Picture 1: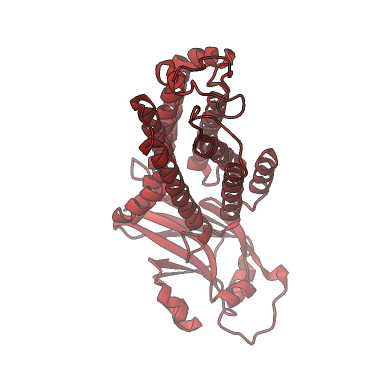
Picture 2 (picture 1 turned 90 degrees about the horizontal axis):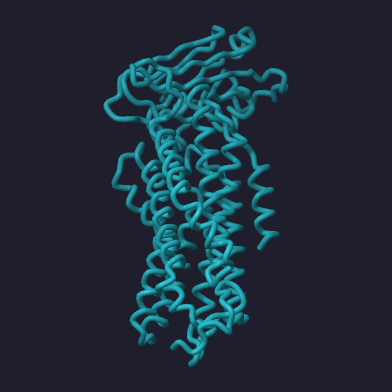
Length: 428
């Protein structure tokens, strides 16, 4: 598992960066010809004062090539089936790049609406034209701005991102207050190296990683709100920390569920026993999720045609499969268990597991009933809150001496139940 985590960190860290809403790059005639218009960026404007600013370094070259920026509102996929000239003629706004800087005001919008910007020039629809040298490419900067609380076009956040900075601030505040209250008792529990030591250690590690991820996201979004670029390195680090947290907790939960079930015995029904089946499923599940997370990082999530990548869909499907597996295993354990105390323990543990794994798929399905600009926030905010509640349930379960100590009386010296075999033997 450490090798998988290291690989995940390295690949995500060095994966290509995604530009923010201050977009810089090159207007490329050859790329515009291949795509019938070079895709530049997408932005969801809202309110009455949306603004797009485009700056070009070499105005003389832009005029010579007939360069222009095309704006499409709610771009219809059917445009891809049109001819090149028909596609370019379908733009709502055409900005002729004849000056160093052009300002385009977006008309008032009743609801937030996505706009896409494409670059084209006189060579775009001339398929037989000669290949142009790369030195003819034009350097550009595009700023996309929504109105702030005062109505001035100064807000770099797209409509679907608005409010996330405030949410991460409140989340960090909640983490800080909670740590002030519970850090000392948790530290004392970890120092005792008791029966919950390994479980609490993994839970605490996952929680700390989530908190650090939230901090990195806040730093990135705070800078992003001022310049539209942010700190891409902090955004990448937030993704790395969240991925490692997901993989760590998946390993713990699968180990607990499969260890309890596949190692069943008459005298020690909760005894942890490593078997080929339990080891294969646990390690295989961790590797599968790691591979899917890596694939999702490499997927083109900013593509104008596929907001949901195949990798992200497979991650959701994988979570559902895990829930079905855990449900089957835990149901078998609960249905054959006579002790009410142990059944209550299984049920509480099941709620924590299901909330962790099902929150994202369920929120993605529920988000379709919301407006387009609300879906990303519903999934992001709801997923973090649900996983935080799942953490609380698991902490209460494994920190509760009255419940866990009773249930774990039949213990093991290996992961995850590390209570000594000599203690509490024969309680049941």
